[in-house]
Length: 342
Ligand SMILES: NC(=O)c1ccc[n+]([C@@H]2O[C@H](COP(=O)([O-])OP(=O)(O)OC[C@H]3O[C@@H](n4cnc5c(N)ncnc54)[C@H](OP(=O)(O)O)[C@@H]3O)[C@@H](O)[C@H]2O)c1
Image 1 (cartoon, rainbow, N blue to C red):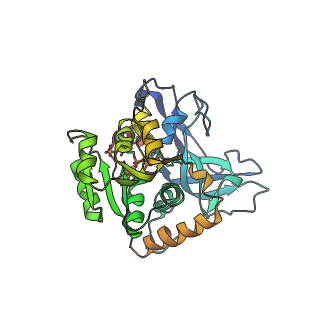
Image 2: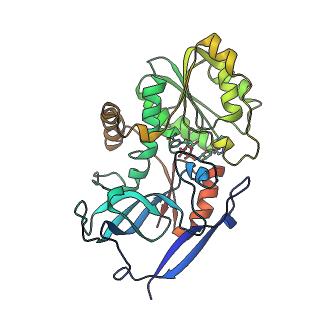
Image 3: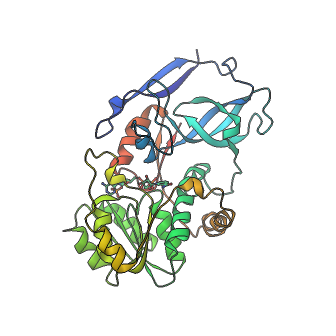
């Protein structure tokens, strides 16, 4: 009997998410007979994207995306092949490769309206559509260009630099002629950044202090701080911002599993004295911005196709390993995009 392996959400974590908050189940499943509604499709999932924002969906707090439901499969951006379509679906057909929100599962029945047919780019792995060519790539590009407004010769500092978003921020900034500095959580990741052409990089876990590291690596101050981590690093970066500096606030991963939020100490006086622009961003705003999307296609998608932007993936095989991979990603196991190959 054929089966479907799924990962269910089991409980809201207090502090660090652990494997016990999720449950892997294998249920009998027949793809030819499972109910598919008129406006739904059945997808054989190929790749899942694991992303830090999912930790936010594991809380009861209201946010821009609903909490996961206890007892139901977790959800993720994914890529899959359409196996069956409902009666009223004409946007995709059997055999199409699509991307959209799917379940952490081998098979997923989802609304057809939520998926987009993927064009396969020659010599570019399909899974890049969940990374550099997809949501994290657009996050990096949109935040850097529309809020960071990097100019040639300026210093751009990016935290979480060896991750899915950070790798792109650094390379796009480099292509714009900036001096690029990155921080990451291991010496191996620092080497990757330097090999990619970052002008400087440091391991934030082993430096004497964030302040000392930023003083050393950003001797002319920071014009753009692309913040992926929040907390203490944001506090330190504020000390080193130049007048009229810009801070795209993309993420705060240092805070997602914290039970006490870090209180920023250095905000008001730096904002005033240096006339800083600090702005949060949400990638969903960028999908509807035609000008930005055109720039993304030109500066990122075509550069990847031409091999001018390099990208890395951390691929774990098997949906049953997704809980461990998700926790590992939150702790820094990944260099580049965390992907599950289902
Ligand atoms: N606003 C939006 O629309 C949007 C969209 C996508 C992503 N984001 C945010 O962007 C950030 C990066 O996302 P991503 O997908 O590129 O993830 P990622 O960087 O590929 O993976 C997460 C990384 O965070 C780092 N990390 C974990 N704890 C940390 C801490 N206490 N201090 C510093 N770094 C820590 C780890 O790397 P190390 O080894 O370096 O510690 C880990 O590899 C996240 O905060 C995410 O929530 C926002």
